[in-house]
Image (cartoon, rainbow, N blue to C red; front, side, top):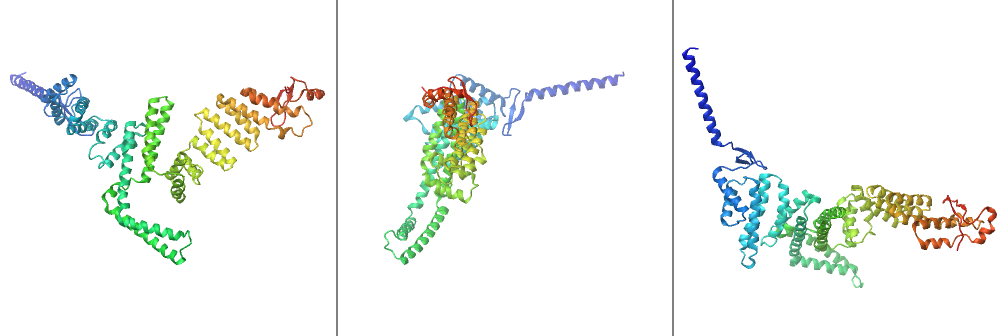
Length: 552
């Protein structure tokens, strides 16, 4: 190789070293830090390999964070710790989730400290700390994900913090939307604290609606028209017969005019009154829907907790249901007339209206109005949308009341099928079905269903064997009344005794025993092969055999 080539190679080598040194310097300069996306898509700057993102001023932020975290570990919640947090939260709110873990601990501690001062507590400072706690739950979800989880956790504190603030009533619709959003999303998993707050807010919103409506009812023009309607009604009814046909006709026209004017006044009120415009949607229909919504979630949680034998959860959700009954249902003047007339009229206009059907069914059960004219039809609509075994049994009961045994049998059979995961309920419903078969005179089917009940759950055997014994005891007229055989005609009582013995029903055993053949009858008919202790064929629908015994 000539000298020129050697020289050029040397230059290239030196240049390579220089470039490498320059690249190394740049690597040291940015310290390997990168930008990353937060959970909400915003950019986190100055992120290292451990997952800490220090923002623009890396060294200062690191120093502040070290100071802050050390103080938090030492439970030093003084002003210098607050200042360090504020710097970090302002300049790099995405540092690490620990900023929010420590931050929540810090502000809850400060809040507790200030609240304990009672009469000397700074209310503005308390509000500031409370708002910061709520904000930190929002921000943690924003930067580190699981926003839904942290929103639900925030809900546990929100109502507690804001319920006594001066602007609470003004912001009720906002708080309602917040808690309704949680309940819609979390469903059966909604925290009981959030549902408790939700119930309270629903009740307060309806109170606001009622206050707004009072403005309309207290208006002098409204009062005048309502008074005119009442006066007209008294004339139109003409209970004492003192008004002429012309007077009745005159006041009928006055009533129609007053009712028309009342509608006009109400329309004008709705359009012009700010309070009514704000709260008009939180009326009685809305409140009924809210009651059903809360009751559904509470009911599912109670059932789940009972199945898991979690007494604490049963108690918590029973409290929620009690709140709904008291504070929501308590404001609804619902009775049988309300169900049959108002809800009934709505259902009659649209028999496919599932929402109204659910209300008629649910309220009728709670208010003991199941004899209403729309209850059965509403139950059928609800069942079609969501087939449930218990509802099938209720529908069967309605057909029993109507003495439609065939339909009752059909629905009891559906109930048994739907109770597939609950053998005890299958057994109980089978006994009900057996009784219906007996009512139709189908004793063989009745007995078979009673035996089926024992197959489902042996715990019901006493009731089932007693029922079969009753079937046998009641079969004398059907099977043996016209018999000329004084021994064989008593076979049904012997068979009944056998069933009662299996059931351990001593009183019924004694009653059956009194109907056994007499010793003299057995002796007289000995030529037929009768003898005490020998087998006796029963015959008729009962079939089989029993042991011949005599009455005591």
